[in-house]
Image (cartoon, rainbow, N blue to C red; front, top):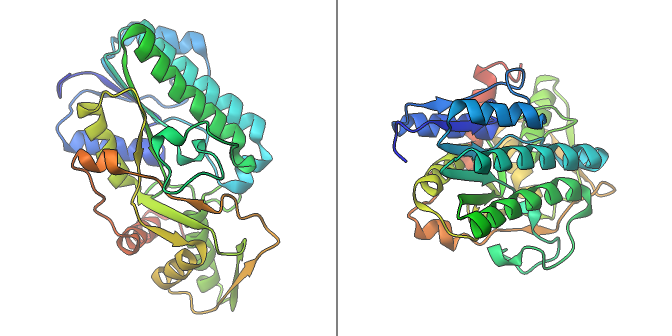
Length: 311
């Protein structure tokens, strides 16, 4: 594999895929292949197989997925399970069938059991029950991870999986009904500031602990894994620093400049009480994040303002 190899970035318009495309381009990869959903429906097995057969693809980064926060996941479990399962099986199987040399599958830290020793090691997978609110999504991601693992074991394919923790950054989804926590908080505080509200209400108790990773830092890790990691076991990627949801909300409040009061609605679900990844494997490859939470939030808010995502 070299910088002229044809590499398919599946899901290039999303937050993760766009960051990975930027990272690969920045590092001199000149033959990146991308397709919009109207050009290639990853839910259509026949279409996917014809695409791989026609294009002679050498490498794949699979980050296309149906994603969303607690509300979206909980309300559409069947959709999240079905769509993510079909995307993973279609792309991974076609890659194996048509001679792809390297594939990196993007999963999520939600694959790990709800109650598991922290920080969560890669070998904690399937040692307990999943968080119920996003079980559908998690099962689909576990299936994709296992498919990569089995193709490596049975056919010697260099297919590997990366499991990031909570991501944020440019091209995130800022819709309050379906977004993850950081873009949802940014929008809430921005609109409250604009409308001169005196209070912002946050879902849950504010006590759960989370770690957050800027998507550009993930993209660098994915590129390093693509180039230099071929082990059977999946590899975690995260910041290594955790904050409570209350601390996160207070940080976003400062970045946006909202001067009102924060209230936490503890009648709403918290999700998993703590979610911290063990990241010694990716650190041993020489990777560490470049963004702090503060600098990452500032960059993301500025991007949202400049692009008109927030008005």
